[in-house]
Image (cartoon, rainbow, N blue to C red; front, top):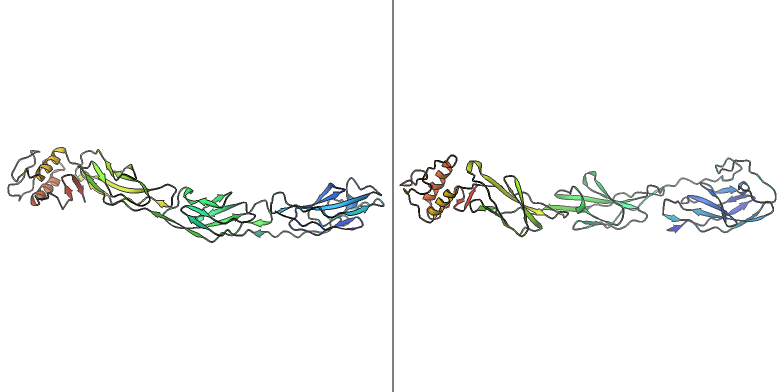
Length: 370
């Protein structure tokens, strides 16, 4: 801290005078090395008003110190001034009240102009590394304020950095303009908080959406393509229920009840970003609808695929009949499954070699509705 200027004293009779100092909080009169009186907003004082009074015929050494404000650390108090000597030859009493308000005989007739506070310098050197915002320190500041979009702000009482990943709720996907303000001590009358710094852009992006979502093994396994940058895991959503999966896994085994086409299961997957990073979770993948067939129907499809079912044969389940010429749809009497398997079996007969139902994207172990 820079000390205040050392006062320069002059003495005219019993009137002690000195130059004003805007940065000084007060002035301390010292008599023979002993502090005697503190004055504010004064540039002179009548020593005849000291209490207890100076003794007649005694020589005194008078010095002065400019005192810095207690609540503002911009300056330190000054050095003690050079002394002036005074010896009272007769009892001189000031007709004023001596309380320092200037209504006596000029004991503190000088006044100090009000202090014009200065703005602190605005922070510079803003930079973002990952989620860490940093800046250069500002002299005389007592902390900083990080200014966020939409009028939000965060106080930083110490240091010159802030983790943008700690904001709660976190900033959404997009480019965010961030500024920093240097804060002044509210009890210090010499400085005001700085204007906001130049802005720096904090980019928040969503990670990639999982692709290749498939359901196999009659709806007992969901799989997807991994290797998504910055993903730390996945969330599989099945019929509205969420199942977290670690980053190193790209499938989830399920145990779901039988469901037909009119009441199909639904599944989607999203990639999960690390909490507190500059990344956010991906959007949900496109929803995939799938059925879970009764076991006897699964067996029927597998038998057909191996060439064990021929047109006109009666096979398990007995209610499924293959037309002799393949011109009529197969019919299954179970409610809600009939129309679905009419199309499924009919298409399988037309494309016996691969038994892939192209119109519904259904395979014997991959019964997915598109």
